[in-house]
Image: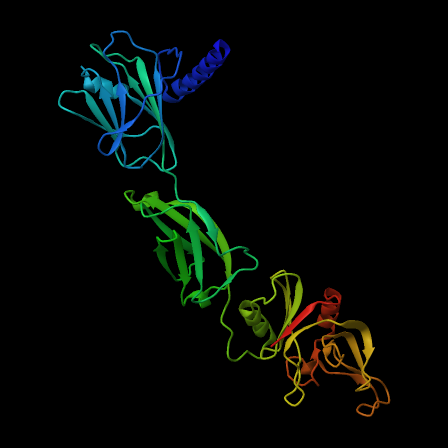
Length: 406
């Protein structure tokens, strides 16, 4: 038992030394024990008791209250009146340093301490009180430590992965907190700026941030930062408590421009990946654009040539069944560079510009398809690309790579 008590005293001495350093106490204090004093509510605040009846300064008593509200008062009840309140106030020490307001009752036995504004959220405080009986004593007899309530914490959100999450006009970002936030002002700020509507559902402690019609002005990654302050704090006290990232897309145009660079840029900024895991090939027939995605991330896109009106490219979900760097079409008797079939019957696939062998009935002298066909729906149903992009697509793709055509 004696060993346990001695160990306890060592911890107390170490703790008291830290407190003295933080509070810049000038006089040496020897601490031999901790006395737990119950705290009771006295109006709007916590009350601690200081027995200042003895002419001998007792060993400092450490009083610990776990958490208090930001607008909560600290009430100190004295056994006997304080003789010199001005001096007493000047000796009271608080860490972190905070401007305090002191209010006394008529007989100087009750001191109410409040901060000039409010206590800072999520902060540990210690206040040291002198004994002060008949003379202006600066010997500390009580040290009161407490913590203030914490900021709300985000426990869940529907934004899971910045690379896979796309938010568009009318969509909501839902943020769940660990507690009711009625005592706080919480606001979400999106950069680059998007127009949002925000409301709080107190039934499930969720903040809803709805993206409105200005999304089309800013495509790409956005950061959403949550700021919070206690309602009695001024606006300068907003504090960032969490952040997340999401992506927005431009709406698809009704008509795509003829210029390839413009068409590619618009398609890049308006195409949402439909498959978020692994590689897949996205073919937009209206735009005549092929886009490559991997794990929901944009890889590349290029202009293509798809089926003509009478020989349309089939729409739907497919995959790559076979590949050949220089296939010969049995049906048309032409060579198809970088061939990759995306239907199981092998009738439709990706390939480069077709090559006619010499003696072909359509081109006896032989030759290669003109690049002018790229960007136009003129094929027999396959999806063609120029030589450079066909080679890139061929090398990037594996058997089984998924294909979506629409």
